[in-house]
Image (cartoon, rainbow, N blue to C red; front, side):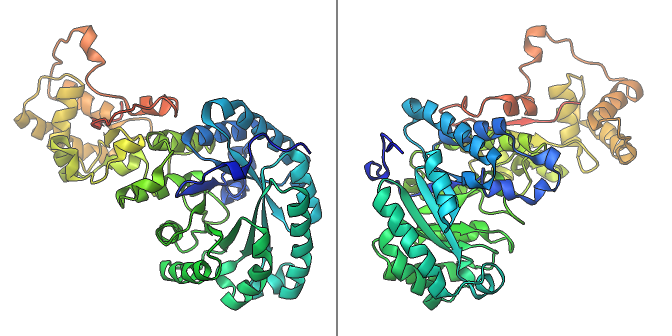
Length: 446
């Protein structure tokens, strides 16, 4: 195989390097129980890869092509996307996730990967119920294979991870890593089943940093306990350079660390130096892109989301209309969330009824009348039919029962009153503004 024109030794790693594994770990999401709804086809994979590269991710993890003929074709398709963007965005490394097995390695090298992410289960559970090999046997199998790859393909990036590392005793992990560390560029510490805590991550990081000071560390944190983000943040602040993430945190079982959630929190914590080269303003658009492929909304638990600026309670709505800072503490506009959404419903107060009818729909209405309309609206909205919208109900009340009239407005001003929420979701993830934007306050169209 011809060596690539750009090699890892020519790259100066940033303080934080995301190894995004949406196309590998993300494809193992439990959402895939409905294959026809959540399956990533080849076009999806190409578009996801393109978006990640434009966002600034320099390392993408893919399946080894040995998995299936389709994965082999998809690897080539993603590689073609990567190659087409080199002149524009620089080189992005494609890493194949491989078992410590010659067939996986051969298929990945033939496909033109830039690196191999080896793994082998090291915990008692893995050795007893997964592959059945002792620690000695793991080393016996891995050592000659890594030596052969390092000797014959010196340009390849090599990582070795003891799968289920946080259920592996440190001395057992060291038994394997001590023998393999001289052959690899990174060692991984995957929390494969989501048992780690921030304290455990800090402790494990200290042990590994002391024992392998010459090597970079890589983290992979599952969210079974809801700790994936906290564990990733702990690892980064304790010196871990490489973090596995996915878009929206999708992955096997409860998923892993969300890329945009991680970068957002590092920004909040003023870890600005670690954010070099990432197109932060593209964070929400790239989340919307993946959610669209999954035929769902950006999850409400994802920090970089419109739901993080959505308000339903009347007290909150009134305050946000005066100043968003009342209930929006974080600079999400810097991450592409440039709107606030106010939901009309049974919890809405007269302030938002007044705002909606006067400022958005153009009714001639004062505060006193708005209070009367709001009282009638709150009585009836609980009985809203699935085919009706709260906005339609409110307008009908204003016109038909309270006899309110709209103010005549020149046509050229009608569309400039409010931004429609869905408009920002239709924009390209790569057409985001370059200067901070004051978030607009919108109510979903009726």
